[in-house]
Length: 253
Image (cartoon, rainbow, N blue to C red):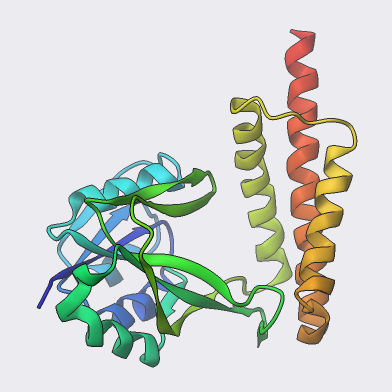
């Protein structure tokens, strides 16, 4: 049976990391944690599940996750965030293919989000994620903070079961993340010299709202679906607005 290394990055996740680690225990052979200098009880909790904890000032989501992969002792990697966990069905799906992992280049699964007070069945679902992969042919890439797995092969098999994502506990939590992620996202737009016009914030954010609330039927997720769609609109609007302002400020220097 092939061996799997779970790779996690953490920072002040004392309220959520334990359930994540518990869900990984039945299917992985080691747990690797790269922690960004947590100041709460995250590490005390993590030490109950693994002694392979590495301390690294935050380098960026992609860089931090690739570092965790480098620290792993096995080639097959299962990656989760601290606010995620494997459903019972997904655990079983992984165990069933563990003897024959090499028959695919990587494995993807759906992610289902619990938002404040309810599960989202439409606007953020199904959210397909490749999270089980061979580090010899796959790595973390994308644009911070929206990372994803890049795989050389094209045989990516979908597994049954969900990753349960316990995202935001309140609207305030969501707003804090928006402020942080839009700053990172705006810096990435500028770094890549993406074209941003005065209309970019409005056009990109409007499409985001239409996609989530109408095309993906977020209205069926009730009030939570409306909140998610509006705040996602705000996220994109703010990201492009920040990038536009950064371009303007650079020209003034």
